Length: 110
Image (cartoon, rainbow, N blue to C red; front, top):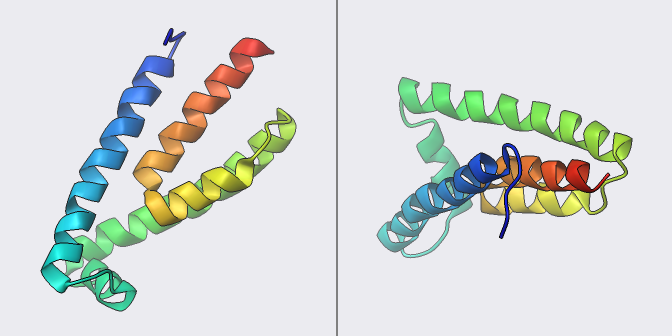
């Protein structure tokens, strides 16, 4: 795979975002005997530090949705909704660099 410009950085961040978030998600699933969304969200607001980080990510995710939707429309990039699904169900730390990576690939072709 050949990378141009920032593609390599986005690709590495995408992999790190997937590995580093899901390693903890899998530990959580093992610890709780399954994925319980209520327990997961309660953990986000377990203390002031995690609440700060949780709110930070939520606001950044909402801003990303607005920006990425507009950017995908501006560039006529298909399948924006797949990025939303991946970012929501997978990890925002994976979905955001994935969008940036695909955007760079798209701009390279255009």
